[in-house]
Length: 100
Image (cartoon, rainbow, N blue to C red; front, side, top):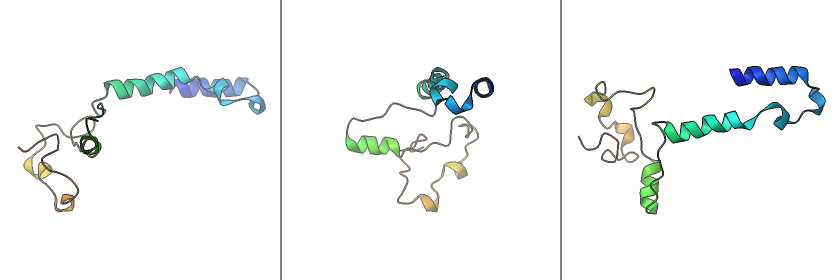
């Protein structure tokens, strides 16, 4: 919200016809937020690129836990069980829950 306020303030004080995006938006705060997300979020992981199959497996990994998701205590068997729509699409062994 702070960035929105700064952009609106700059647009109101400068001549709009001569503005370029670099004069309105400072890229450093945006880059900081993106970098923080990719380096500290639970939802981001380093790519497992030992071989093409490991990379493909990493890209297709699903998780219902994490921010906005289920906790391990709340995830019962009905949530963790393989649904009929998953057959042939999701490997039940290669999930964060594992074989248990």
